[in-house]
Image (cartoon, rainbow, N blue to C red; front, side, top):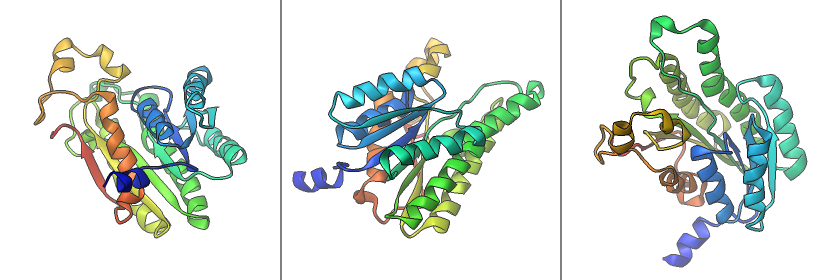
Length: 249
């Protein structure tokens, strides 16, 4: 059984691209895939932060590329994708993780904020997923994992643009699974509250407890198993699905 697990979760020779990969859940996934043998492409707006993570990956003996791009702007997304393929020749696993979730009373949301939230959480992942998904489908296939939120399944007040964008991301997952299958599998991780950088602004009570079955927020590393599983051959018959990693919300 151990040998089977080792084979299923061996990503040696694979290349994974993670948006928002310099911190939070993205960083945890970058580190996990590198530890399992994958070469990694780390993307975020802050190149220095991406390069720090890339150096950590290289210290494990893997190849790593740091790229700066605003993942809500197509004029920055397209060159980023080209640079990634120029460097590695392929992308086997794409993780659309970059996002933002400002809490603002709906009547105070300005159009610029509304557009920014939708751009980063849906418009950008659509472009990245479509462009890379097509290349995967025309090549040797691959796996796309979209990081969504329980906010799309159980919407909360004051985060309506975010919840709507993540609901659109969930719908996109099903559509892409059919459009780019059978060679490309597309799945969603619906994440609950996690103690990432954003949680530093939470009241202490929210950091200690949550309204879910486990009664607490998740630690960032607790996202890792779901991502590895969905990207691996262990999930070879799983596509177009939403996997909830939310403590039983």
